[in-house]
Image (tube, rainbow, N blue to C red; front, side, top):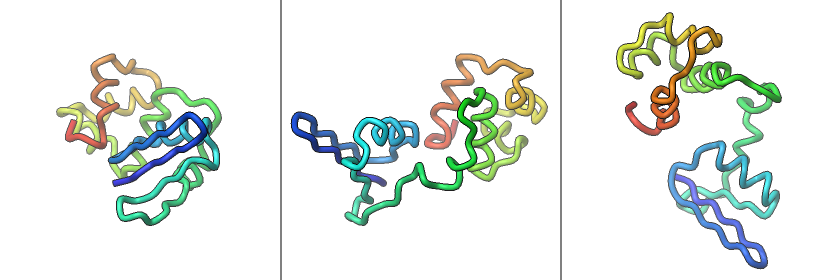
Length: 119
């Protein structure tokens, strides 16, 4: 669990819980060094954007490339992710990652909840 605080002259933001990296990225871009990220017990956390995962990320990525990046970061194979998505075969996951199979709106919603839910 994380605790994020931003305090400026007219802005005061506090967020508690599991904070998606995308939200942390937006806050870091907007508030820079004024952003404080701590664990619930008060220990200062390192900037998630300095993690190796983000150092190799290309400037622009397709949705399929993001899917592969997050799947690999979670330590899942295509088969395991397919199982978590409700029995999807590995070839369909591979097709989505390579851009040969479209990611439907419903699938995007399910993927957006993962890994914080059981899909």
